[in-house]
Amino acid sequence: MICGFAFMLRWGRHGDASLDHRFDELASYVHQNLASNDADEVLIIGHCAGTVAAICFLDRLQQLRQQVGDTVFFPRVKLLTLGHVIPMIGMMRQADWFRMRLKTVAQADIPWLDYTSPADPLCCVLVDPLQACGISRPPHAPDYRVRSSRFDKMFDEPSYAELRRDPFRIHFQYLRST
Image 1 (cartoon, rainbow, N blue to C red):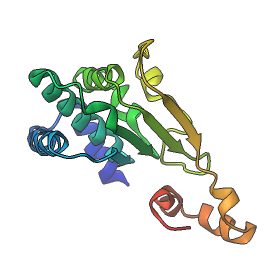
Image 2 (cartoon, rainbow, N blue to C red; image 1 turned 120 degrees about the horizontal axis):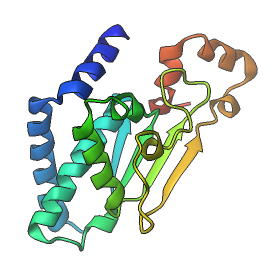
Image 3 (tube, rainbow, N blue to C red; image 1 turned 45 degrees about the vertical axis):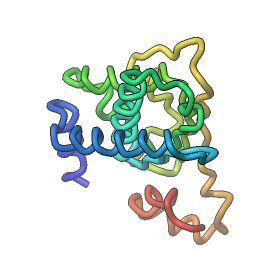
């Protein structure tokens, strides 16, 4: 857990050029595939620190889209965040670079569904990441919906009590079959 916080602190303060390069490559790959593909939707999913990565990737995809004047395919792209920690970086003084990316994604026409759980001590529970990072949601912004993962309704009481004793297990429950 300490390593995860240290990574997020470093990433927030300084960015990460190697990750940026990977986001560029992935955005180019996805953009090419969207242009030649008739898929109904492309769902970008991020969990925990992966929610920050999803924002960085979508920022790159949006920049690529603007460079080529592409507006046709983007409504098919949707974002799902699970157990997000976006404010962990977005509220750092030195993270202007990330807030700019978050703002770009907020202004794009990307529907966003966010799931967190009050039982998860490792996420920003039911927190609007834009509001927490000081970014206004544009009036024309697509749907942003926040939902609570009702893990308490998925398990009987003894199983849920056992699940809650392990913060990592409950944090990764979003990704597990119940």
